[in-house]
Length: 396
Image (cartoon, rainbow, N blue to C red; front, side):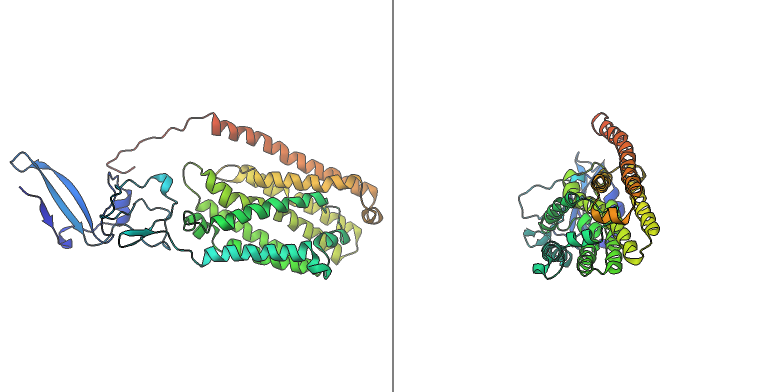
């Protein structure tokens, strides 16, 4: 008996495409994306010793993710053209975050850049321009530099100058992110389109506002701006956590698209508490209130460090706790030789108390960090991952 051809879509029950994608499959759909051929072996013999095959033509594609602006995260299909000699293959788990290719006849094109890709790159460049020309150069000496403003309104928790060198790796890694998210292989990944979203744009925007407000010594506006930047960056990290690669961690994804923002978030935590202290110095001349604000600001950096070490469902991350330790040390060391401004404003005992408190908090974070690093290293390098195979018929 010759193979039976079924051309009518009514003779084939329509099923939910998600149920099809969850079922185990030994082939990938081939041919026109709107029409697929499926070969089904029948257990019954046709009497001639040959197995009967039914060729079923689906009038609509079971593939949910054809366009690049759709959700790509749970796609388990790979598209191929009949006229291309390249053999079909299964879409592996490692490919889940690679962008699908748009088809145009026999050619496959990478997903085009969209507005979000351009926006991320442009806002990063604008933020760098403002930070360098206003914050570092003082707009050609027309405005005070950020460092000069910090020294003018110095508080007990103003970090040393060398602590600000952390801005260099932040800008470098975010430049790598801004360029990498333009590349065809990464531009349509969920961690970019949905995970990062517009949070990076908002962070750069309000950080630019903070740079300008701080240069003009508008400390209320600068405090609100840096706090908004911190909130936006925290939302970015939470969103990326949801859209990260499932299963085994991707080192490339982490270093390109997540590490720069952990580093930036840690620095924004320090900037927020310093701006909080400067705000109280600006609003009141009461030394007791200023001292209380400094102590509260010191303690405010401890909960974020604790959360990223012990509170994340996905496991600890060490970048933000390390930045906070860096910040505590950067605050404590200058207090061994306090400036004339601090000596004229605070008692020596107050300066020593804040210095010792900074060391205490740094040691506290370090004592939480060391065992977590040991446990992480043991789990990462000294354990064997066991994968349980479920029943293929149930798709578990």
